[in-house]
Image (cartoon, rainbow, N blue to C red; front, side):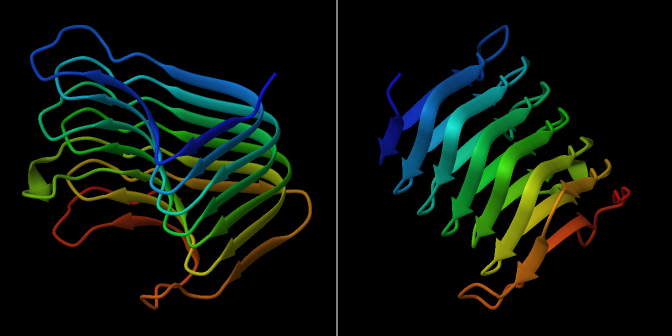
Length: 212
């Protein structure tokens, strides 16, 4: 089986605004899976159906680098549920402003993020997110954010890396759950001065609850 490399490339599954049903799931399995230079894997709903799940499985490593994106999301016009994102590998890297995000900007709940790595997870100036909110009017959003779940040997969050579940409407933020057999380290800031962190947030003007 060959490795998978996306360099300025993309894999997309979309339910359009006038469509019915659900967006499809996206599943990749290979020895190594590498996304680079703004590459994207995306399942999203613009309509009434659900976004699909995204599952990335590698026998060796997963690397998401240089502003790349993996997401399952509900857009502003959508009202279906967001899908879950699942990573499984020996080692996982999310770096240089890359994001893994189960977000909702409509009225459907965001999905959860599950990250399992036998050896280590490195979040080096990138992030794992499950957020709710509309950029134009956050108080109209009734959806709930999902959980961020990390299960690994060691977790290193550096250069402003983030593990965040955020509520920007009237729903609830999810939980951030970390299980590590060995080391857990948060260190450093990014170019904007943002610290490395794991948190669950209720945004300004939002009225829902934060998670744990």
